[in-house]
Image (cartoon, rainbow, N blue to C red; front, top):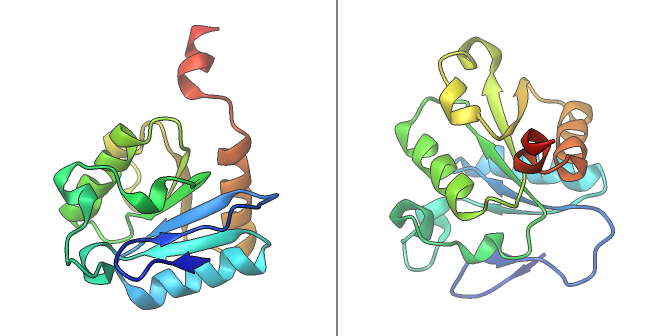
Length: 152
């Protein structure tokens, strides 16, 4: 992982497995998920939104593209806490990065109430393990484009 001094983190140019961007505002949770992904052999970077940006501004909050997503193969987003801000960030990710699969961590009891937000994503239920996270990321990375799938 490379980190630019004034902007979002960035990936190396060479990779054999999917590069995963972890969108998570809680620094300890973000670090644990990044470590879990790296232990599973993925290159991963974490982004905590406005608090982790030198400018204090997260482009996703303004529905703008995020530089951290440019070389991302899979985006991981957590909806563990029903914070409306997290739903808005997920909504922006889905709208701005339609060709990038998104894995969403969600507590199973909340899945039904979040159904609309989860359409077009790959869900992994909490508590996540390295095995369940690895499977979700690989499934998302290898999945057929959902739009093309509906046309067949």
